[in-house]
Image (tube, rainbow, N blue to C red; front, side, top):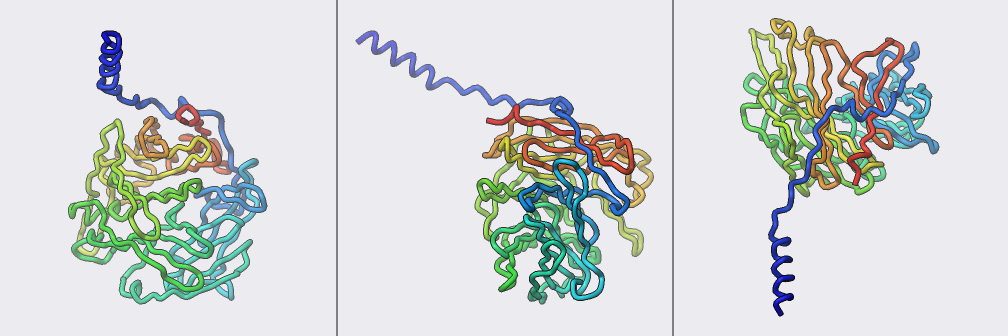
Length: 383
């Protein structure tokens, strides 16, 4: 009996002991560089803007966004193998100017115009068209949608989800209505509109004149059929399906992230919006399908050179930027924070996830005819 009591006592000690906190790795992104990748820019390509990876004819291709079109680059060679641009006139052109577009598997391309005209192309040939009921959008002075990466997503056969951007350049009091609720909409190519979301942004009125208030990033996990969405100046992550919020998660970070309203200046009819250099901002979400990890890219802070220049167009290339890459597991539990610094004039915008790991822009580009990326291996953090 005495021995049984001792065993029971020892078990109680272990069961009541506090679990040791999970260690979050903090380091530099360059510790995980596992090679380089080169994209060749031919004479017909003005710029390479990487968006995603698609499958076509059993092969994988990087998608590069172009004005009213796209190009496909081989994931093996980095060479361009296909490109398409919507003509301005003729039967393949849109009614009105293009406001949203995206490329999907099997070289399919969807484009939406300012008049609600939607066209679907395959291999550069039009295969379907629909005119959406545009009544609500016609009331706006300016129509904007956010179509980058998974913000424009195929959620079923001929069914698409798209993010609205209600930023209003002409409103005299506020640029973003923070009571707005239709952040996402769905439509299909046979019946038109299907649904729209009904939730407010997790932001206070102090963000009503900030461009970041309507800046949205998202990621789709095709292995679990899960879509996640978040605002640039917030840690709130939303899981959404059929326009409804299934779950809201407060993402954790080891470093302090400060979300501050942007700087808005008005001089007569001239208006100027720019981000607060002290503010953090979510800039990208990715899914590493091999290591089963989510990657959240955050602009931690900005150091302005020549701060007297306030026009956002003239400030291109004048900022030093500090980024964090936050690594999460499939349940959005944080596993690591990796930092990288880009000096003024260095290209910090490009990031993409091929199968396994991620590719990020090298700070220094050796040639204008090539785009160089680091391969980042995240397998250390895989379960």
